[in-house]
Length: 101
Ligand code: FES
Image 1 (tube, rainbow, N blue to C red):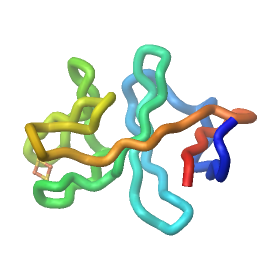
Image 2 (image 1 turned 90 degrees about the vertical axis):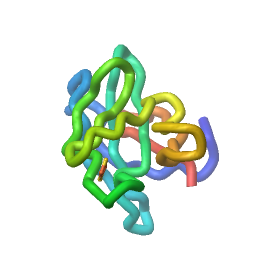
Image 3 (image 1 turned 45 degrees about the horizontal axis):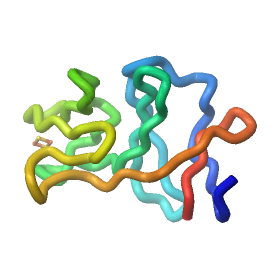
């Protein structure tokens, strides 16, 4: 288990390919996506114009922004070279999605 894990959402309610909004313990927006048996946690605000990425959808291994369609790779958070959102390592512990820090 990783040190300093913080629970951000219930894992049992995650549906494959359906983004869910969550927050860091200090209140920053996150988006949690279960996809093909893996759970991904990314920063939840689009760096283009600030759309809530939890309202986006999954396509071709990417989370697509609901406003203008930027597509962030679930694994890396990258949209284009040098442009993307941060990803967070996570674990499922006792039925909760937990991130480090
Ligand atoms: S706000 Fe996300 S692509 Fe424009």
